Image (cartoon, rainbow, N blue to C red; front, top):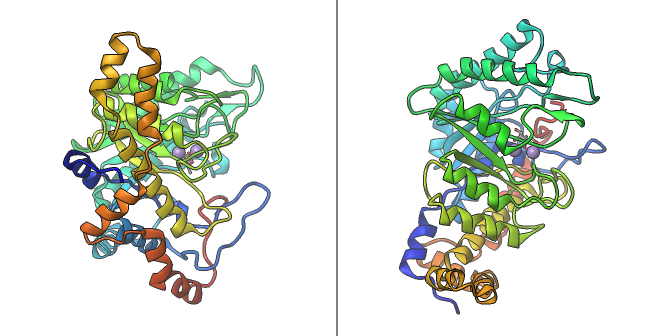
Length: 388
Ligand code: LRH
Ligand code: MN
Ligand code: MN
């Protein structure tokens, strides 16, 4: 069995992966949303479910909220509820994609009144962050156009910067803004923040508290995502990840499911760039569980990240460098692949047990009775927020 060195164990022990509240709600495609028994009826229940993931894995100490999906009257109370369950409230995600006023844009809109409304929403999100103790405001903009000529591409970039500056100015000293890019969808011709370069240009112009958010599902097929990870870290602007996996587009499947090797390569670059367990680089999930059970789906996800982190930590850095310097292509690749092909699951199970955690968190959750209880208690769960 592979042994995990004390250094590797210590790195794994510090690992923290933030869960998205919306992963616990019902979700689907534009064709159908399937209701799952036991789905949370409000943000309090979403947080309770997230706390279960942390209870069996000790990997998920915080929960991201999406506003207005997770709107409550009293955020300090929601925070107490989370803390009572052993978790924190994390990133606040703004939402300017479900309001008729934003049909032609929000922060980029031609009409100052619409821009004002969208900016006000972000300022409200920052007020919420003050109450929840959250550090990060995550902005993803569903803005763009469908037809050539429809929109003034350049004017929209300028207005975006102006709007972001107003939002940025309201951040507290310990708060950050992370700007997420996505190459298409819902717009199909142009998107206002389509790629890391645009996000970088926009946040670099704001200042040190603005960073880029990299969602792994938001690139064209075949994109070398780990290269982007490397570059953003070189530039000191990799603020956070939205992890998920995809076969085709923004599938939001379980991280590490579609392409475990890609996840390994990404985490290897995070480690190489000093981003692992570095608070500047937040690890988050952004997933939806359309057909599988949601809590086990999240448990599987954080375990996948943990497994690939352990494997990436196993890369023999000295041997790799020696092979790289001597130009030994195949030896370098072999060092890399040896780590990737190492089955770390037995060692991780043993290590979990040594820390008083279940060796098999999936089995521990299944045996806990929690799923049966929520399925019996909760009737009429909410959607993840899509259309809600
Ligand atoms: C957009 C996105 C963004 C949203 C989330 C629900 O595709 O990745 O992060 O906030 O999905
Ligand atoms: Mn995302
Ligand atoms: Mn997405």
